Length: 199
Image (tube, rainbow, N blue to C red; front, side, top):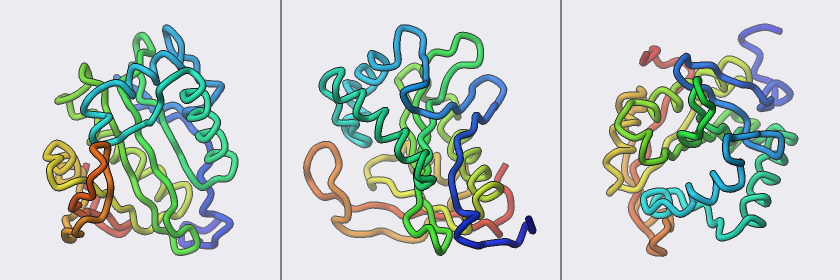
């Protein structure tokens, strides 16, 4: 297949494991087996205040965690959403999540997001994960534009976006309702497949 092929048939997100050395991105779903159990790991993540504020999982019990895993499996099966667990290379413990999903599949536009557990924050993992998922989507699924949105008060996400080469494109007013229930302004950052590699 030509590297310039941008047909809709190519724009399918297929399950993959992305090895980044000290951690890996592994597909979320029922088959994922995390130390101590995948469902308890998800429930612990959902209870973290920062995740609940900026990336609410809305998981209150094991059934909610299982429903989340089912949604991830469905997204992969349909080729429209790629949810990755960020896991430690040595012991497989959960560090966080990286996500990429189509917002306009036929036009090659996707959005990327992430969350990290407290023990993984401040180590550059979110930047590396977002960059890896972006490169993967460009190389394997023909993504041409990847957007990164974050609440204006989420300064850590703004740093991730800048370090990852996602250019700031503007501020949208009262555009998204986060975990606190209020609509907040968001920054829009984006990378194009044609942008210089940001490392």
